[in-house]
Length: 342
Ligand SMILES: C[S@@+](CC[C@H](N)C(=O)[O-])C[C@H]1O[C@@H](n2cnc3c(N)ncnc32)[C@H](O)[C@@H]1O
Image (cartoon, rainbow, N blue to C red; front, side):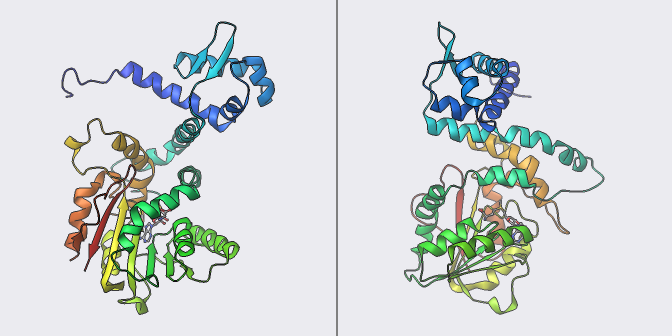
């Protein structure tokens, strides 16, 4: 039982959830975007005209947001939204996951019973929502903060890098573009992801990237001792066949090569999860997407985000890798980097 005095106010929790849903709906249907652009404070009628929506609905949305303390109500029936635009957009997008998760509920309900299917694969609307966080400037920042220090471990610019579990290849392409002397491979077992990656590759006309639709636990036989770097970006906690993947990473890395796994910085131990913002964000997402994904497939072990970084490190070490300390910062706000060598 929770310690006395440490209990959340459940009444407020539920009401905040409702407010977050309505806030997310406002972002999704464009009310927030118009609100940002219109001269503030404005009336419900002005905002309704600007959005092309019915005034009565806009009024109810505004009042819900006033009650939640997000929109400010002024004396002359005018309203203002007193947050920086970038904050509104980031959190507005964040809140749109709520209706997506609600729509995923039947999938979750089907795998919860002790008997029956263990998991399910990705769901496109969820992936698209997640992709909304990967703007080009965010990927550049990730390269600067979390990848460059790993690449600096080998000083050559003509390295060979494998992006294992590359998804739509957004990171793969950005890495190849940034390091034109490198050779970059992106692999993923998901056909749709590799097709998307190849379509983008055609548009960008880069000659140093290759995408292959293969599972990480069955890499091409002629790749033994082939790569200077293997990166697993948001892959291990989502993947099935983690042991097979790590066995293959060991085979395809050169003896002086480096592996780097990036996953949410959530601890393996429940006692360390109290009041951690990042765990509060990632564990619910894992319940609906990462965990069922990692339980799908013929040998899904079911890691998910709750596996945590301590146990992930142990798993990597069990595969005979030595952990390598890189710089001072192994954690940013959304990911923890684990670097390792044979
Ligand atoms: C959360 S996505 C990350 C995609 C990409 N790395 C990124 O950060 O945009 C996880 C990816 O791991 C892939 N994956 C899952 N199981 C895998 C396996 N056994 N081998 C290789 N990739 C796998 C999924 O298909 C998916 O594209």
